[in-house]
Amino acid sequence: MKKLVVCLCVFALATMANAQDIQSLQQLLRDTNASWTAAENEISRMSPMEQESMLGLLPGIYNLAEFPEESSLSAPEERGGYETPHTPIRNQGQCGSCYAFGACATYEGWRLLGGTTTDLSEQWFMMKAKQIGPSGGCSGWYLDTSMNLLKNHGVVNESQCPYRAAEANCPTGLVPSHKISAWASTTSKATIQNAIRQYGPVYAGFAVYTDFSSYSGGYYEYKTGSLRGYHAICVVGYDDIGFKVKNSWGTGWGDKGYFKIKYSQMTNSVQFGTCFGGSFYITK
Image (cartoon, rainbow, N blue to C red; front, side):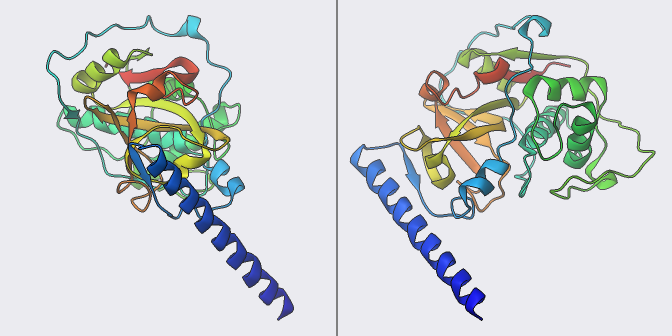
């Protein structure tokens, strides 16, 4: 009974502290006329360690010399917004598999442009990444190696190996039927925009700071907090202010699972779409 009382007290104190943090962030956003809003959600209620475990984009081993030559698609001629077809919001759960969700979402959106609805197995993707190494599984992986997994190995359907939010092998004997032939990368805003129009969703990463977990709407720009880690996502649209992004934290986070982010966050410490080799898209 004493242990239960202690646990309840700790939970209550943590809840109160989280509420105070949210209120302080909301006040800061008001004081600075910020372009986004904050609210408590299932991600912000997690401990720092739990939040960090979901940020599965790793830096380090990409080799720009082995990348395809960076493309330079021209900027769209017309102003205004555009959103490419894409599949629904998914939830990676307590696993650092965001790299798998971002890559699979990019492929699924690319296929949608051709009129084909596809649901890839993120479980297959993350376990194949673990086999290839280093890391993979729930321990995170890389942007460029993710694109090469789609190109060199392929992925099976979700129905063949459903997602489990944990490291568990898929059934033996499965043959991947979804592969790509080529990908490209860029750090240019204009090229990302035109790639979204021409090829569908774009696979990218960014640095996640403490305040991002409480995002609830508007155009995110970093305001406060320490670095939590790096996160892989899928960019599905843009307008005159910033990008629209499909996240993999379920529909209970952000704006029904999505967030928008200002273009200014490409050139500051957030490094949106420019870190670890830039932003990646499928060309064929």
